[in-house]
Structures are given as structure tokens and as C-alpha cells.
Image (tube, rainbow, N blue to C red):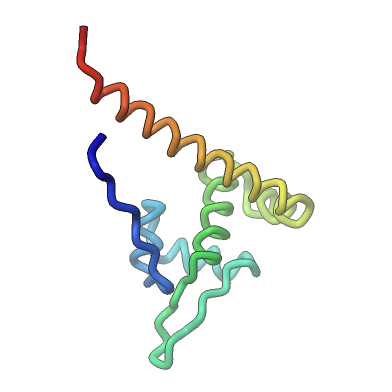
Length: 114
């Protein structure tokens, strides 16, 4: 099986990078930041937002609730308030399953066809 390099994780991400990860506008990321206390990026001396992996995980959770599950902002806030740990655990499991599926699809494609 060919070598597959690991993704390099950065310590800080710019707002444009974060928006590109989710396919949304930077204005939406800023809006979610104002609506959800769990999204609180550091700001540089020049005022640029610096998102950590923890911020990105929280944005992923909000994205999942609002964009994929179709909850309203108020519904997403309620869900996070009542069972954030369970939601994070489910998201982690979903991400792991997606990676496994991707690996299996890649493995299947590399097998010789009969």
C-alpha cells in the first residue's frame, strides 16, 4: 500500500482557512462567533482572528447542528447547552467512521479487478 502522509496540524488558522474548511463565508464564521460563546478565537496585535483546533472543533459542531441537521440557532444553542459532551462524542465517532470509509473505498479501488 502506498505511503500516505499525515495531515499537518497548525497551531493557529486564519478565518479564511476556517471558512474554506466548511465551505462557508467568513462573515458566517464571524456571525457564529458572536452567537456562540464556545467559539472564541484569539486576536493578534493587529486584530486578526487566530482559530485553534478547539475553536475549529466547536465550529464543526455548530456547522453540523445548523447546516447538516437543520436546527435553528436557538435550537443549536439549546442542544449545546444540554448535551455538548454527547454531541462532541457523536461528531468524533462520525469523523472516525468517515475516515475509515474513505480508507476502505481507497483500498477497494486499489485491488485488482476480476
